Structure formats: structure tokens, C-alpha cells
Length: 116
Length: 113
Image 1 (cartoon, helix red, strand yellow):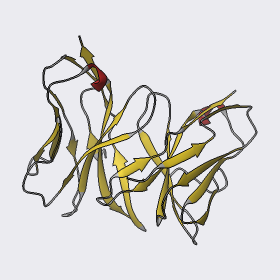
Image 2 (cartoon, helix red, strand yellow; image 1 turned 90 degrees about the vertical axis):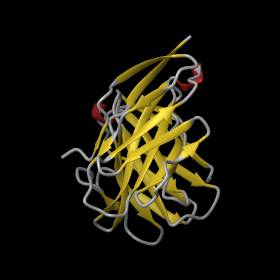
Image 3 (cartoon, one colour; image 1 turned 180 degrees about the horizontal axis):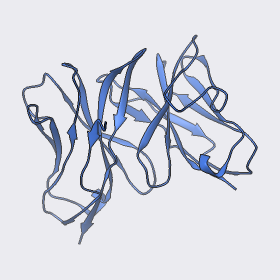
């Protein structure tokens, strides 16, 4: 079963507008971490934001915020005031316990296009 | 955050040959991770490499195909053996940050012809 689901293969947003990228997850663990990463066309993977399962407040990092709804098992990324440089692939990820330790699993990704 | 370098940045290899990818971290870390990203796909964990012990491989990946070395706390290598065109991917190494976020190297873009 898919653990991380990103249902939007591609999204368009007008420059300076806000955009929400959806992510739902599946876990039976009580303690877990949720992450968003950005991958520009250059291929590098850039960590954006983290939300712990016990955190009561939604995480924010500059123009990025994570809309965490634990009961719904969703962790949507909100990018405010989109910029052309935000055009990239965005991956939602979850840290979960694995045999022998922990591992991070990634969703399929959402490609964001910012229009001028 | 850790600074991670990888060599080579890209390579074109013939099928049946092997390529060793190096990953260097600027600080000592317990675990290093190797991922594969096939064209247009997400990241898939190949294995976790702890210093001083055998790497732990994920389902679908075997040591004979992807041998890993971890000789010290700042360095690891991944070898892609007996390559086929299906091995054409980006290979990334990563380490944990303080909240278990992943910090990645720039990746090695491998094309197998």
C-alpha cells in the first residue's frame, strides 16, 4: 500500500499567488516525521520544511508552511507569494520505523509551474 | 546542515561494466543513505550504510548488484555492478539532519548504453 500519496502530478500557479500541494500519508506509528523537499531541474534535492507528529502548531519556514491535519493524515505544503524560482518538483516524505532502524519514504511528487 | 559531495557528477557507461560512486560528508555521521531516482520517478532507498557494519538493503536491492562500502564516518561508496540500461538513473547519497530531515549530495547521473 502506498504510504505517501501526492495526487497532483502537475500544478500551475500565477506568480505572486499562493499554492497548496497536497500530501496524505498512512502510518500506524504514533511518532513520525513529515517533510517536504524541492527538486529543481538541476536535480539537487533541497529540504524545505519539517513537521513532527506531536507538534501542535503547523510548521512554517519563510514562505513555506505545512498544513498538518493529523486526523485526516494530511500534510499539505502551502507556498505563499509564488516566485518563478519555485518552479520545480516537490516531494512529500515521511520518516518511519523500518526493520533495523528508520527510513524515509517519498511520494511520487508534484511538478509546480509558476507562470509570469 | 552537512555539506555532501559526490563523484562523478555524471557518467556514461557500457552495459556489463561497473561504476563506483563516491560520497564525502564534511562532518562525521553515523548513517549514510543511498537512493536511486529513475527518470521521471521519485526517490527509492537502496540501502543504509553504517560505519563498521554491513549495509542494510531494501527490498528489491541486493549486495551483489549494489555493493556498498563505509570505511569511516565521512565517506561511503556505492558500486553499480554489471550495468544494464535499466540502471540509468540519478544516484544520491544523503545523511540525517537533527530532525531526521535528509541532506543530499548533488547526485550522480548515470546513463548506461
